[in-house]
Image (cartoon, rainbow, N blue to C red):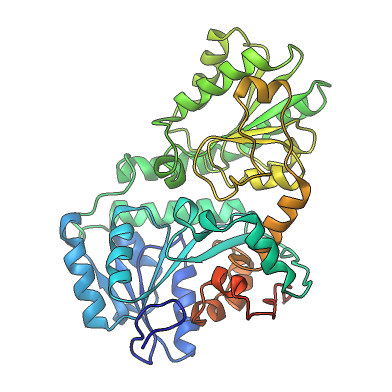
Amino acid sequence: MTNTTGKPMRSPQRVFLFLQGPHGPFFSELAERLRETGARCFRVAFNAGDSSRWKDRQSLLEYQGHLSEWPNTCANLIDTTKATDLVLYGDVRRHHAEAIKIADAAGLTVHVFEEGYLRPYWATYERDGSNGNSKLMQITLEQMQKALRRTADVPALPPDRWGDLRMHMIHGALYHWHVMFRNQRFPHYKPHRDQTVAEEFRLQILRLLRRPRHIVERWVTTRRIRTGGRPYHVVLLQLEHDASFRAFSNFASQTEFVDMVIKGFAEGAPSHHRLVFKAHPLEDGRAPLERTILESARVHGVPDRVHYVRGGKLAFLLQAARSAVTVNSTSAHQALWRGLPVRSFGTSVYDKPGLASHQSLPDFFADPMPPDPNSYAIYRQFLLETSQVPGGYYSIKGRSQMLRQVVDRMLSPNDPYDFRLDARETEAQQLRVVRS
């Protein structure tokens, strides 16, 4: 027997095998909700940070082996737990990518969580892959439009409060504290990033301590840009260790991207225009971004026309911007929503006809091509009716908003996109936020 996805039917009881999740208690709380439906849940811990927020210690499975041994262990865990579902956050980490292959071959349903494509008001839930591996990459705007024509006109309202950045930073610092000081049971653990655990922890703490000073500096710089009376373009920077940047772009470092953008700006932008580099809110200083930007601006002869803004809310800058440039940041959705031209250089789910521009950088800065508003309206509404779940992973209120809906989506036999694209479906998913 097979289900609607074509995968073999497994045990009637759902058994969820969790791998690494977002920092904090979201996966543990999600498992509690799933158990209320009669499902069983297990968690694989690769380090002490993974195990620290999992409440049910009896269902905690510690993986203490080498990464090279993980594929065999993963297959054995699926067999011994009789798992029917695999749950993870991010799909390109090596042990996650290998687990997805094994789970798919075994007929498991693979649930992938990520930060929201339409952040900050939503989180992303998909099946089998996200970002460059998402099914969105194969779905055309025409297919999306036809699917929306078969659905009710249900408004998608944002949550009344988004999980704040401070809680994300705190959960991250606690996670790395556990990995740094309580990781004796995991002697072979190696982080998927280049930095050591001690360096990760140090950077997390420094970011928290420097946050008050950075808030003041950011406010001053942003105000100077907004009140300067000059047209400006915004560059949406990503974390250099970000999975999307590494897996779905051709840039080896931010330095390459920064230099390319400044060179294009110097060649094409009118002389009174300015270029603003907006750092990722979680940028922790591991890469000397500001120094790199200022040096590149000097080399290309535009030192007085380039600015650097450290973190903060992107909306304040985009409100008066002329365009946005990025590798493949999901923040580009905020620019597209405002009708701003977007030039992207990596593989992204929004790189579709009528949305992102493919002009050369000098031509883009000289006369950027804006997105087609109808195309973006179709694209955005399709995401809201499929993979975007109101809420977030880090604040209490954000998690509660997300948990209200995501459990039903996980239990559904239908992939979120297939559910909407199926010509037989006419009932729209309920996206209106329930206020507590």
